[in-house]
Length: 114
Image 1 (cartoon, rainbow, N blue to C red):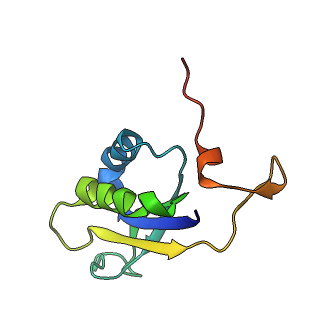
Image 2: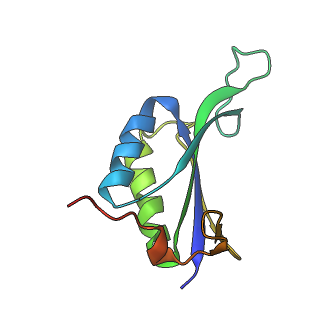
Protein backbone atom coordinates (compact mmCIF):
# COMPACT_ATOMS: atom_id res chain seq x y z
CA UNK A 1 0.00 0.00 0.00
CA UNK A 2 1.26 3.49 -0.75
CA UNK A 3 0.60 6.98 0.54
CA UNK A 4 -1.20 9.99 -0.84
CA UNK A 5 -0.83 13.59 0.26
CA UNK A 6 -4.05 15.53 0.71
CA UNK A 7 -3.56 19.29 0.61
CA UNK A 8 -6.42 21.69 1.22
CA UNK A 9 -6.68 25.45 1.35
CA UNK A 10 -9.75 26.59 3.27
CA UNK A 11 -11.21 29.69 4.87
CA UNK A 12 -9.97 30.43 8.39
CA UNK A 13 -13.53 30.67 9.68
CA UNK A 14 -14.25 27.00 8.83
CA UNK A 15 -10.92 25.59 10.02
CA UNK A 16 -12.15 24.38 13.41
CA UNK A 17 -15.08 22.59 11.76
CA UNK A 18 -12.69 20.93 9.26
CA UNK A 19 -10.31 19.82 12.04
CA UNK A 20 -13.18 18.29 13.99
CA UNK A 21 -14.47 16.45 10.92
CA UNK A 22 -11.00 15.06 10.15
CA UNK A 23 -10.72 13.69 13.67
CA UNK A 24 -14.16 12.06 13.25
CA UNK A 25 -13.00 10.18 10.12
CA UNK A 26 -9.88 8.97 11.92
CA UNK A 27 -7.11 11.23 10.63
CA UNK A 28 -4.24 10.71 13.07
CA UNK A 29 -2.04 13.64 12.05
CA UNK A 30 -2.05 16.80 10.00
CA UNK A 31 -0.09 20.00 9.52
CA UNK A 32 -1.89 23.34 9.37
CA UNK A 33 -0.30 26.57 8.24
CA UNK A 34 -1.61 30.07 7.73
CA UNK A 35 -1.13 31.18 4.13
CA UNK A 36 -2.00 34.10 1.89
CA UNK A 37 -3.11 34.03 -1.70
CA UNK A 38 -5.87 34.57 -4.16
CA UNK A 39 -7.59 32.54 -6.83
CA UNK A 40 -11.30 32.39 -7.50
CA UNK A 41 -11.70 34.91 -4.68
CA UNK A 42 -9.50 37.99 -4.36
CA UNK A 43 -9.74 40.57 -1.58
CA UNK A 44 -10.06 43.73 -3.65
CA UNK A 45 -9.84 45.83 -0.47
CA UNK A 46 -6.28 44.63 0.17
CA UNK A 47 -3.44 46.28 -1.77
CA UNK A 48 -2.12 42.92 -2.94
CA UNK A 49 -5.60 41.27 -3.30
CA UNK A 50 -4.45 38.53 -0.95
CA UNK A 51 -6.73 36.84 1.56
CA UNK A 52 -5.55 34.81 4.53
CA UNK A 53 -6.43 31.12 4.57
CA UNK A 54 -5.41 27.85 6.21
CA UNK A 55 -3.38 25.21 4.38
CA UNK A 56 -3.88 21.65 5.63
CA UNK A 57 -1.51 18.82 4.69
CA UNK A 58 -2.20 15.18 5.46
CA UNK A 59 -0.22 12.06 4.56
CA UNK A 60 -2.61 9.13 4.43
CA UNK A 61 -2.84 5.62 2.99
CA UNK A 62 -4.09 5.76 -0.58
CA UNK A 63 -7.26 3.85 0.31
CA UNK A 64 -8.41 6.68 2.62
CA UNK A 65 -7.43 9.74 0.54
CA UNK A 66 -10.82 10.22 -1.15
CA UNK A 67 -12.63 9.88 2.19
CA UNK A 68 -10.37 12.56 3.71
CA UNK A 69 -10.85 14.89 0.72
CA UNK A 70 -14.63 14.45 0.92
CA UNK A 71 -14.62 15.14 4.67
CA UNK A 72 -12.70 18.38 4.10
CA UNK A 73 -15.04 19.51 1.34
CA UNK A 74 -18.15 18.67 3.40
CA UNK A 75 -16.89 20.63 6.41
CA UNK A 76 -15.48 23.60 4.48
CA UNK A 77 -18.29 24.13 1.94
CA UNK A 78 -20.43 27.22 2.38
CA UNK A 79 -21.17 27.70 -1.33
CA UNK A 80 -19.30 30.96 -1.93
CA UNK A 81 -16.28 32.06 -3.92
CA UNK A 82 -13.16 31.36 -1.92
CA UNK A 83 -14.39 28.15 -0.29
CA UNK A 84 -11.01 26.69 -1.19
CA UNK A 85 -9.46 23.72 -2.94
CA UNK A 86 -8.41 20.15 -2.17
CA UNK A 87 -5.67 18.25 -4.02
CA UNK A 88 -4.67 14.60 -3.78
CA UNK A 89 -1.11 13.85 -4.85
CA UNK A 90 0.90 10.64 -5.02
CA UNK A 91 3.74 10.24 -2.52
CA UNK A 92 6.76 8.40 -3.84
CA UNK A 93 8.28 7.62 -0.44
CA UNK A 94 7.65 8.63 3.16
CA UNK A 95 10.19 8.19 5.95
CA UNK A 96 9.83 8.47 9.71
CA UNK A 97 12.75 10.41 11.14
CA UNK A 98 12.37 8.74 14.55
CA UNK A 99 12.94 5.24 13.14
CA UNK A 100 15.08 6.21 10.12
CA UNK A 101 12.92 3.82 8.09
CA UNK A 102 10.36 4.06 5.34
CA UNK A 103 6.88 4.45 6.79
CA UNK A 104 3.96 2.22 6.00
CA UNK A 105 0.38 3.47 6.42
CA UNK A 106 -0.61 1.25 9.36
CA UNK A 107 2.49 2.35 11.31
CA UNK A 108 1.45 6.01 11.25
CA UNK A 109 -1.69 5.35 13.26
CA UNK A 110 -1.36 6.25 16.91
CA UNK A 111 -2.27 3.67 19.46
CA UNK A 112 -5.51 4.73 21.03
CA UNK A 113 -5.54 5.07 24.84
CA UNK A 114 -7.41 2.25 26.51
